[in-house]
Every structure is written in C-alpha cells, then in structure tokens.
Length: 125
Image (tube, rainbow, N blue to C red; front, side, top):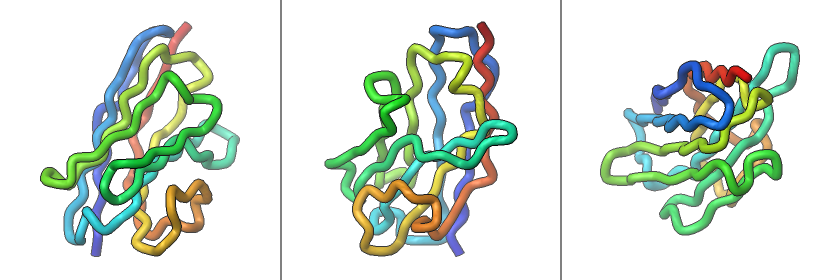
C-alpha cells in the first residue's frame, strides 16, 4: 500500500512563496505519475500540476502556469510543488496523488490511485 504524506503548507502573505513536499512510501515511486490537486471550501477538487515518471515532462493548470513548479526526486521518493507569487485565490488544501496506470500527465482526479491527507495553504491579502 502506497502512503503519501504532504508537508510545507502554512500561512503566507500575497506575493510570497511556499514549497510543498510529498513523501511516498510503500510502493515503487519511480513508476508512478504524480500530481498535485487543491480543494478550496465549498469547491470541487481541481488539478494543479502533473509530472511524468522520470520528471522530464510537466503540465500545469492555467491558473498556476508561470507561478508554480512541480518537480520530483526519485532517489528520495518525493515530489515537490514550488509556489511563487501566491494569491489569495490559491488558498486551499493541497493534495498530492500517485497514478500507477498508463495515463500520461493525468489531470482528472479519478485517474489517480493514491492520495495524501492534504496540507493547508492560506494566502492572506
């Protein structure tokens, strides 16, 4: 059973930065596509970013393109989300997810097989 544990969330002023980490255990991390999602109160979970198994390719939601960067370190079984120029509308619980199937850079939550518990990011204006 794969376990994903996010960390790095917190409270930050608008324009600031945070770096989220997601540590994986119990599986074969280099074989999983990885993604970050977020969910704000009273809203559906939405796609943020995805990264391929080797880390060579990435894909971003339009709302975060140019501000967020997803990366991974397969030697450390960890995926990261560097968030810069944060805005109040980025406030949400952020989740990492692992896809063990063949889908490439998946954006739909239903494609992912494993999820972390989430970490809160709050951006104040």
